[in-house]
Image (spheres, helix red, strand yellow):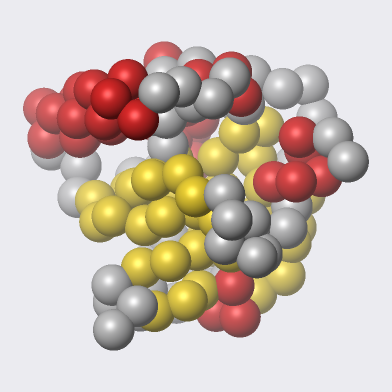
Length: 131
């Protein structure tokens, strides 16, 4: 299975449910260009990304993108911004793609990859709220 196909199966861990009332992007700064980094390197990238979001005054909330069996996890952020800005941020942080949630519908949107955007279904069934 290639990386794009893996992206299409992701589920998302969060501390609070994310509703359908707002549109948002799910963006990670970790593992740029699909190359797995050390935990310390990913932490540095993640902190730099959070500082960038703060400097742009963009609201965000922690979310973790995971493989369906939860064996792979990548810290990400649910960011409230428009889709073009989200794609620019993903490119800036060397990410292949973002997830875009619009009116509760989940899309996989390429950033660095040459792929067509894909509708993945409703976001809610892929959301796992941690208690």
